[in-house]
Length: 357
Ligand SMILES: Cc1cc2nc3c(=O)[nH]c(=O)nc-3n(C[C@H](O)[C@H](O)[C@H](O)COP(=O)(O)OP(=O)(O)OC[C@H]3O[C@@H](n4cnc5c(N)ncnc54)[C@H](O)[C@@H]3O)c2cc1C
Image 1 (cartoon, protein in one colour):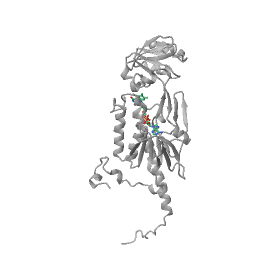
Image 2 (cartoon, protein in one colour):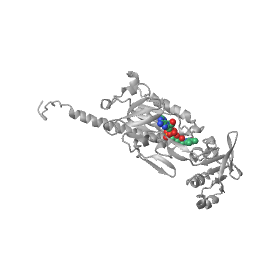
Image 3 (tube, protein in one colour):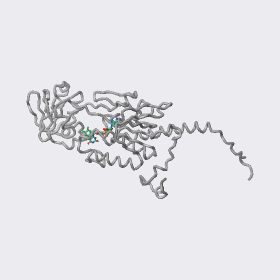
Image 4 (tube, protein in one colour):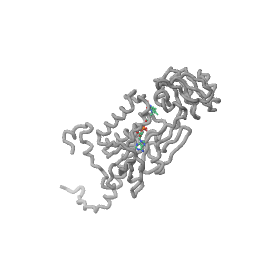
């Protein structure tokens, strides 16, 4: 029970969480939590904070491999620009835990709908054999970057090899940059990266798309190198150049490549959630508020939107959390109406309006 002093203040972690009447609890099958969040990156923690502050019983299960773990800093996050990714998440965890949410290390391997009504409640199975029941599920499992299979790219990923100029372009501005073509969006990436450095080499890497846009690239001073890329040349863990199949080495200090973005959607796919595919990759289909095509299941962050950076992944989690809370309130209200209708009504006291007192 919260102390009366705590009740008067609005400080988090003072017991306010316990003052919540867990509305609707009697109407659900005694679940372990209101919302289970699978994935504790920016999207998952953003959602957890909002839901915990709405008095929801929240459990976050996180396998601890955020997509940007290869980078030393998170750039472009307003108020947190340049912070190490692990520090940003550690602060996020602290904030979430202050409101009573539980964060658990682990991997969810299965989510099964279990209620009589559609989307009513779910059972989650963890890799260690633990089971957890929840009224709603939010999946914020991110995506994996499928890198071009060129020796050295994986080794320098997030260090001297990047994909997003808005994340890392500033740090390598005006350097000797390269773009290694790997797919239909590579020319677009080449034209984009030219904005960050005049000293740009576009490695066509035997892709054909360059022919149509050669004029544009050359007009901007980009040097186009044909021929297949064999490997990156690395010295002391830093990029020094790009080696072609014919042995030519082109000196470069940083590269951009376009991975194929693949949503970590296996849990959702097994539940029948619809996905979408474009030349960029695949992602889980949701509405604007993160609702998937599976009733009772929401998704947010990179699993549902391949283009999100950290700050807007967190924002997407917040939006979806509000939608889940609204959905739970709707269910509680519906159940309350049914319960009220089935309760014998008491005889209202007869009142004669306008009668003299
Ligand atoms: C190299 C690199 C550098 C980047 N740098 C920046 C930057 O500077 N600034 C920026 O704004 N963006 C940057 N990004 C993009 C950023 O990584 C994403 O925008 C962000 O991580 C998306 O957050 P998310 O919560 O959707 O997914 P993630 O951060 O990837 O979090 C998903 C979490 O879910 C967990 N998970 C997955 N499956 C399961 C499961 N079955 N059970 C339990 N947990 C699971 C994962 O382990 C992970 O912890 C970078 C990306 C890369 C690849």
